[in-house]
Image (tube, rainbow, N blue to C red):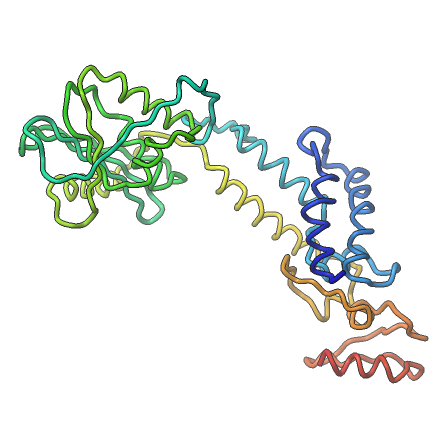
Length: 341
């Protein structure tokens, strides 16, 4: 099979089998990490078709596979952070993505319509905004066409605009009747979904359903000059300037995974830079890359310095990566090197 296919099988099947339940059994210890790297070595040899004397570090670089001990650490770290466990005892007040099991007869949906004009009763416009890494949320209350009240809140910087929009809907006071108007179509679709599992969103559903009067959800197109929407947008942006944070949200799983992955790649790069193994490979590939797949049996002999050479390649110099192999190297190795250059 092609090296790309072998790598895909390893990543999607073998690696998941190896790391199954890693959150429970993994400990960041030398003996365990060494064992994991030994297990990973065999699939990487199949991907790269390199000689068995090639070092683990070089195999990881050629195959584009992250050292499995670093991936195990990333999974464990992501799991702890997703559950709100922080080493610095940081306490998050709201976990936006926590799910709840809902019985089939408890599933509800809140339908919505398009906004045309303000009603004669109460009209509430909500909005959320994110600028310069800060997040704000606001709503403004109208009776007829007159503004009678407004509130602004600054959210923790790790919040998204969607979270700010939903938060603005959630903090509304109980209304006897009226329209609740937002320019966040994604928030309205979440409230109208039968498959929504996030506890925070489902609490809003129950809250609106339990209102003593009738509350109509409506969508208004943003930045079209609608009086209430422009006012709510202005208040949400002004909330960003507040010094104190009114609401702390737990980081989303997506952001946690992204940051953990970035840290993992950085640790891999540092390990590769300081490794004493794979010096010949480092002359060709100084940067780690998960998209790289080098599975040519002949070229990898040049990349690694391990092959059918009668003498080992022992020195690299110059910007063109010219190699000196000794006087006994055959013509085949010279041809392979020319292909690389």
